[in-house]
Each structure stands twice: as structure tokens, then as C-alpha cells.
Image 1: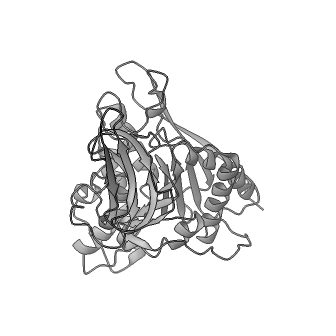
Image 2 (image 1 turned 90 degrees about the horizontal axis):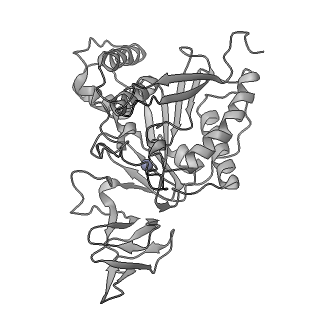
Image 3 (image 1 turned 90 degrees about the vertical axis):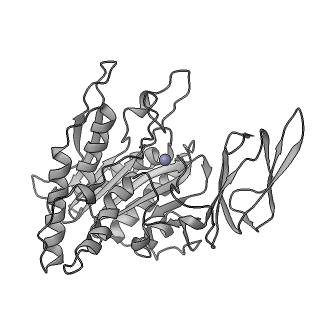
Amino acid sequence: MPSPNLSIGERLEYPLPAGADGRVHRITAFRYGSAGKGPKAYLQAGLHADEFPGMFALHLLRPMLETAAREGRINGEILVLPQANPLGLTQHPDGFLYGRKESGSGQNFNRGYADLVNLLPPLSLGPDAAANTALIRLAMRDVLAAHAPSTPLDAMRQRLLLLAHDADLVLDLHADNQALPHIYVGTPLWPDAQDIAAEIGARAVLLAEVSGGNPFDEALSGPWWELARRYPDSPVPNGCLATTIEMGSNDDVDPVLARNQAEALFRILARRGFITGESLPDLPELPCGATQLTAMSQIRSPATGLIVYHAALGDHVIEGQAIATILDPLGDEVTVCAETSGCLFARHSQPYGWPDKFIGKIAGTDEIESRKGLLLTD
Ligand SMILES: [Zn+2]
């Protein structure tokens, strides 16, 4: 039986400082289980506020967690933020929601998170991995709490990290413009994250230690393997498995898809011990191998014009194969060929290109010479 003081779907609200327009926005989280007892999982959606499928999936996950909580089957704490970015949700000046970047500053909502490993003071780590984990999390919390945010966006980044920094598992739910499910995860976390990729039916798994720009997931997972390097005489585990899950296409708001994805998230939590007493099916087979992010081709338009795709999402394309034609209605046609072989897992939903616009992604296997520096699309 659940203990009488067990919180069931406790709603937590965190107001952000008012912006220049005087509006106050709030970050809302739902807590299942008990804080500070046992493992912690953190799930958020909508950090890019115009990427919708994760919001729907978390909305459907909440009553499932509610039931498990009532039955006393939550082990530790599960935090759920179905809309992590209240700032982005208000950016619809001309009838269309723009949620990837803050309109005033132009900053990407999923970049620029605190570089925790370089902000931490020298740590007195010992021979016990669990004690080191606890000490590192406390030090992270102190560093985050000491920061005085200068803008609502800065305060939002700080709050989200304060809520997530001590989680064992962080699932940051995004979507790509037009895409099949895929994940980004730190190289040291693979194959540990294989169950996550398999449950969501990932068609690409993209690995990097540093993908550039300090996205949310790497701000949480990266410090652990870097601290392990800096303190080679003390055991430092990967204390936070954080991954960016691209659930599908930005505009996927489909009840069947969302239900399936909510159930997949629930099974991920159950397989990892955050929910007890579940009878679980065998893990589905992962439909792809893992790819270094440096082997992912970002297909760019070479010209201006209509994009006529010749390959569908999910197609295995071959290097040199024609992927699209850029058709200038006033002039010529230019063929765009694949620079690597692999699964075409993302395309652009707006079929109009211009020089250097990203119009697709291929998960290849061989490193691509030009893929250096910032590896993610800004
Ligand atoms: Zn995103």
C-alpha cells in the first residue's frame, strides 16, 4: 500500500522573472513518487516549443504514472514536464508558433546550458562511487543555485537544470521537421541506452561526446565522463543517462502515435526500475545500428527553388544516389545526391530550398570529413 504522505502527481510551479513585456511565465512539473528516495527520472517535452509529439505523449503518460503511484509502484521519483518551455509557447506573432529560438535574442532554446564541469570547484572525491555521485550532484546544485539569472531565458535554463541535475535518467523529448524517431546520446552512454532506442523504434542513433553548443542533455550527461577523466584515481560513474529523443515530425499530433509513445516511455521507466510490478514484453529489436554524429550527413540545398524529393523517409539510400531536385520555376534544375549511404531519417516539411538550407539527414556509417565543430543544426 502507498504510504499516506506519498505524493501522487504533485503539481510544482516555478515562476520565471518577468520579461521586458512584464509577463510572468511558469515552468510546471508533475512529480510522481517521492523526492530524495531512490532513483530519479526526469522527462520533458517542448523545449523547442513547436515540437509537439512529446507533449502529447507525456500528457498520456501522466495518468499511467498516476495509477502506478496510487498502487505504490513508483520507485523513487519521476518528474514530468509536458511543456518545458513556457517562453517559446507565446511566440506566435503572425499566426504561427515559432518555438525553436527566442524571438528577441535569437538564442536556441536548446543551447547554452551551463558548462557544469568547468564551473564546479575542486572536488574531494573518495573511493566510493555512490558517495562521489552524491557529492558531485550536491556540488552541481550549489553551482546552479548560486547563479543569478539575467533574463527569463537564463532563468528557465537554470530552473530546468536544477530540476534535472540529480536525475539518473533524463529523456528530453523533441521532434525534427519531418522525421522518423531517432535519438542523440553521448558516446559513453552507448549501448547502455539501447533499450530507449529500441522502445521508441529509433531509425537512427547518433553518438557524440560533444556535439557543440551545450544542449540540455549534454549539459547533464557530459560532466560525468569528463569528471571521470579529471579524477582518474576516484571512481566516477556516468551519473546521468541523458538523451535527446526525436519522437517524429514536429507537427505529429496523433492519438494513436502518442498512445504508443506514452506506453513506450512507461516501459522504459519500468525496465529501468522506476516502476515496479510490471510484466514487460521482450525488448523490441532495434531497427538500426548506432552512428557517430560525424557520420550523419546533413543534406544542404545547393540552390534556390522547389524541393522535389526522390527518396522517402526511411529509405536506405546509396552514396551518389539522387535524393532531390531543386527546381527553380524561373530557371534550372539542380540534382542533390547523397554524400553517404544510410537511412534517410529526416527531411524538411517546407518544400522550398535555398543555398545551404538543410533539407535532410542520412545516418551513414563512415565519418564525413566536413563534419567538425558544431555538429547539430542550429
Ligand atoms: Zn528540438
